Image (tube, rainbow, N blue to C red):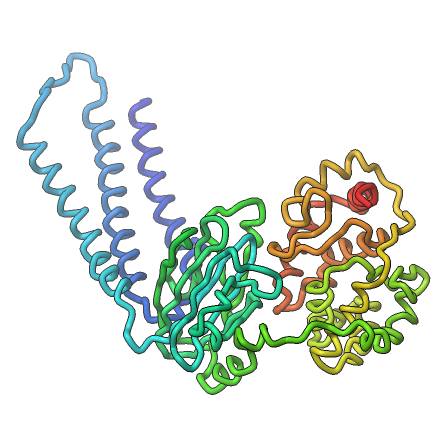
Length: 454
């Protein structure tokens, strides 16, 4: 009876596995590239392994019943069977051959990108994507991680003439033309990453110290998420980007709107004296010395990094911030940001803010800093152990900031009042991190600890 029960369990396992496979909602995303052959290869693997799975388990169930213990019967002992070994080896070889052969043809195509493919470079770093396209000369300039700075985030060699016309896309959002082959060169600035768009079916690791590549042809216009599918640290799960597939005319217009490397080198330094006049508008809320004003819900600006201020002004101007339902104070900032009409005016204001004294703020949040220190261990990976911010991880300074403002932003990230816009990739990262704080008390504990870092 025990043998019969075991056989029934094995048969039910096979039937349940088949039902789960065919009725499961977890399967491929819709194909949006030329790589239908990869789907075919996976399907072949599923069929072969599936047939073997069913055959082996049903044979096992048969053997359990057929050769179960019965009084008066003895097992036939045959330690070796050349015939059986031959057929098992032959069947296994045929199965492996059938699985590997389609993949070899696909791989041969995969490693041979078309000569007329559009080239671009995707650069991965913890936990961010950025991109580069060749300019009119069609050649990408030399790079080195030693050249990486907030002004040169991709690390282009300023002395290489081939890189001067390279188009720089510092955002994690990249646009590509539909129905045109694309040759993606992949480079990492720190650890092992992986560039994957599930709908495109192809993926490839980014290996520090070398340039890898993949190619594909987007076939369906739309927005697709870029994932890192190689464990790259604590923020691996939040390393997201976006690719926008569109008609070539729209792609060309987007590409022309991005600066060349020469453009970024030619940006003049901000004039603090000129920025003082523009800051007069800001001072009405943020204070004459950038100290902030809790009564007006205006956070402290003095001590903030220029790259972070610039990004937030752009976000307010473009509607990435200040347009969400419930973002009352962001909605107030959106029109104020538009008083800075161009990048020069923005650079001038940032230069002036940089001259303001970075005085300690008065604490208004009184949680448990000891508990907050434990919570901050996660934050420190991006923002630094001293909470002074790390530009390479796109994490601003927290130490010395208005504590009431930090708490409000954590709540906004948690509730997706901030980070809910499709183009706010960094906000989406913070939304996922804010969800690790179980309640408002935990946020206050965290902020209380940050207050000790002033």
